[in-house]
Length: 448
Image 1: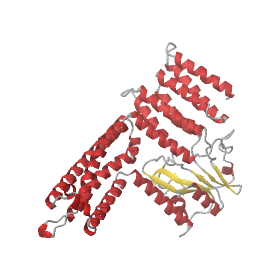
Image 2: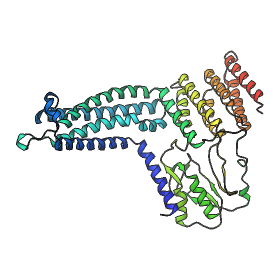
Image 3: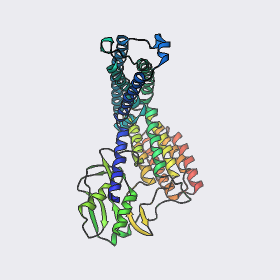
Image 4: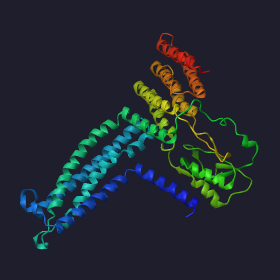
């Protein structure tokens, strides 16, 4: 297996695994298989091992064939009925969340391990009872009653009741705005820790970010995309290896989270020699293209989810200022974490030679993603504008980089312009106090 084929296979497996983890069928299917295996094992013990305690406690283990069938039939029918109820409740919760908040968070509900596990437990108990029922025989058939398996089926019924009670509690909590926003925020923080693990030094930023000197030195050859969809991930090491192999420069035309259309440029390379189809396929294999954005390699999508919830809260039809402020609190936590992290340079080198010009996020782009639309939709809302200023005050204290501080100052000036235009002087007292504190911090830190 060649290195290109291995890379393609690894990326494909990783993408499929993430899709399965986010699906509503994978974990329940695993639990059902486990329940069938457990039923088979317990029946085997009943059939091959003489269990003396069965005779010692006849009231506990001594049910006949008819009684055992009746018990397991009742358990199986009730479990499959409850599984249908659980599925219905989940669909209602998904519909409510989509209409009340944003459809972007539906994937988080589908990835919820509790929802998947509860559905799997009920269907698994149903499958367990079916397998055990199949082995019970009366006297005319050669009597066989797996007493241990029947008792375990009864115990599993009580386990199912406990899961049902917990599920109702969990779903009532999970559809609350605070839980939805917190789940999206913590997933985004986890992605930031994975994508940007290195702490920020005294200065950060990409010294080459604002100029691309290679543009004037090379003729660029466009490499078309093979699929249409959102870029969910990119194997940067594989892209760097391909550039090194061809001894040329690759420039990404589309980055993670962006939409790419089949046949449009995905990457351009500094070469006048056309690539073969297998080389184009190998380059496309570095990218994972799907139907929607995912947060694993795209922290900006996590920010996007929270911003969408805030925009829905600020809409005239909802007018939920408290939820919008809650979104700002979690966005502040995300940006504070990001402000202290080093974002890799867009220019990637190997042995001192430029090979890849990446297309990725910057602190300034993340800051704009988090605050621009909220600011634009918060005109006249004193509470939200004040919280925006307080958020900038918290973030600016978390970074030592002068470029990032300048971006924060620009955001502060934009908020001030909105407040001056839409807030009356009588209502602006709280915002003015927040601006005084923020300007004091800027002056103390020496932000230009």
